[in-house]
Amino acid sequence: MAILANMKNKEVASVFGEIADLLEINGEQAFRVNSYRRVARTVKDLTKDIEELSRDGGLAALQGVGKASAERIQEYLTTGKIAMHQDLMAAMPAGLPALLKISGMGPKKVALVWKSLNVTGIEDLKRAIASGEFAALKGMGAKSVEQIAKGIELLENSAGRTPLGLAWPLAEELADAMRAVKGVRRVEIAGSLRRGAETIGDLDLLCEADDGAIIVGAFTTLPQVKRVLANGDTKGSVLVERRDGADIQVDCRVVPGESFGAALQYFTGSKEHNVRLREIASKKGWKLNEWGLFDGDKRLAGTDEAGIYEKLGVPFVSPEQREDRGEFDLREIEPLIELSDIRGDLHCHTTASDGTADAEAMARAACDRGYEYIAITDHSKSSAVANGLAIDRMWRQIEMVRSLNKKFDKITLLVGCECDILADGSMDYPDNLLAACDFVVASVHSAMKQSRDKVTGRILSAIENPYVTLVGHPTTRLINRREPMDLDMEAVISKAAETQTALELNSSWQRLDLCDRHVRMAVEAGVKIAIDTDAHSIAQFDQMRYGIATARRGWVRAKDVINTLHLPLLRKWIAKKRSR
Ligand code: DGT
Ligand code: CA
Ligand code: CA
Ligand code: ZN
Image: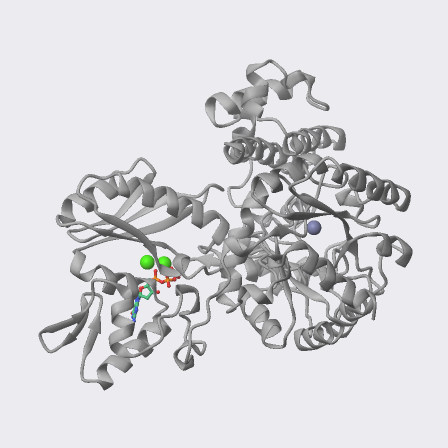
């Protein structure tokens, strides 16, 4: 429920943000633009459901929301759009708003290229970059244009791939809808989603049933379907709208029970893993396909996945490990970490900095999840946009969290902070303040474009600080939106191993940082991982499963992760580095 409520708030905030962008491109006066931005921010930070608020007549009472804005919010809630927003879009070249999606292109720059070079879309912009005209404009330079060119590349490479956090809830919704169809005995999600990949090309559903055509018919007429791409006897393909408005393709296949395991194995992939598996079958003189494992006409396996691996004499690895990254060489299967192994969240934000719930509400929510502990880690003073805590505020926060802790008996609140690693590699808080915290996350939030040596050096000096227990989102990448920093990961990993510093696997689906490969490198070097959510709201605690999926792709076991420890052992682990 909370997630749904939040979604409407998010939609309204994003439409108002777009209105502000469009007005700014049109050269409207700053105060007018800012008034829309203010509404966007207020609505985004709102802890209440906006629909509820509007029913209670509370819209106009919101800070920064005037009568006109309140009416526009109302308009959105009733009709799903705002006429003024549509008019603004209609009044400018259709390709122009898309330029805002390019990293580095704000409304001012969009207006600049439009007015001075008559650029009206991405292709125009690419030409203006190639010809040097863009860099020659007043206020532009080679460096910022280069950054924008990279932004275009990133956008084009990511086009079509859906982040895990948008794909997974949608896949579950569709799988549930298919489970409710009469005649369907079993539904599984296959493909890259079952493998826990960070982005998903299309969704793959598998249904067990007898009459394929009827089931495919039910699939292609689900209420979620926007367009039907294919409609056959055993397979249907459709387009479905994502939460953010883009489309994603969904394939649905119907198979009989005797082939369900073979089909699940085949359509889970990866392709590389399947190619290897088929080779192993053919070396034995057998044939493996989506219908089963066969010796001539004789069916050897196929009803369940495990049977196929067993017959082939290959370890039955988890879907997340099926990438042909060495899984065929495993002699014994070690269980990978599971969501239920997690005993606490070590990175979250409250209203003290940029979160939407206060420490008490966050702790209560963590307690409801059955966690043993939670570290409250708000931003430090230099994170001004995130309302980071100045030193005196941080001292008061430490007192506040300690006394709040006395109110809880089932969960322990660890006093923490997310301390910025500044551009020169120093920490944003002095050591005595860090020492007063139980738990310190150190993260880069600025100057991410520095050279490889510089950014690596910054992380290394943070790791050397005795009070830093964890490096937060080490590469600072944002999936589909921002490249990782140019980090010497091997150097970071070896310094972390040497100093007993943990590295984060940030579970936010926009980050998933460290990524699967890096997390595997770290664990193989003996570095401990913290899998946490960086939650800025109660609902975001649910992101833990994305981190767990990524960890499993990195072959992580429960013992590699510090927040699988019971609290006394976790405290002991933290103390070890501090006492060195
Ligand atoms: P995606 O959708 O790009 O995120 O990645 P997948 O892995 O879901 O790929 P998809 O949807 O094209 O196909 C699903 C699975 O079906 C894939 O992981 C393996 C299997 N598959 C598809 N095409 C082939 C193929 O040509 N050869 C083999 N061996 N397997 C295939
Ligand atoms: Ca797929
Ligand atoms: Ca597919
Ligand atoms: Zn954070």
